[in-house]
Image 1 (cartoon, rainbow, N blue to C red):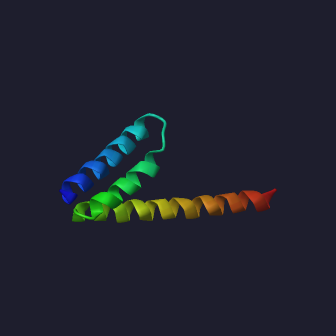
Image 2: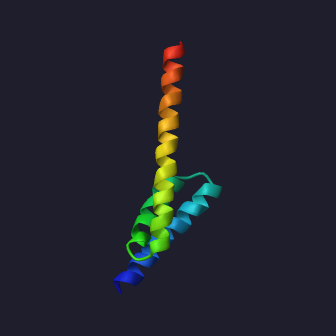
Length: 74
């Protein structure tokens, strides 16, 4: 029962997040928690969660450096 519930809730979050990639919405805020729930039961979801966390971290570092460059170039 627990696996079924985690799969349903996690899958729903990921599916809605993927829909929000196409239409404007908080896609990342739904995909990552959905993958986190799915990773409790499925190793493939754990792999995708690590990949998405790594990409989010790289994006945040890039944005921070771009904003710092912009701030000090003025």
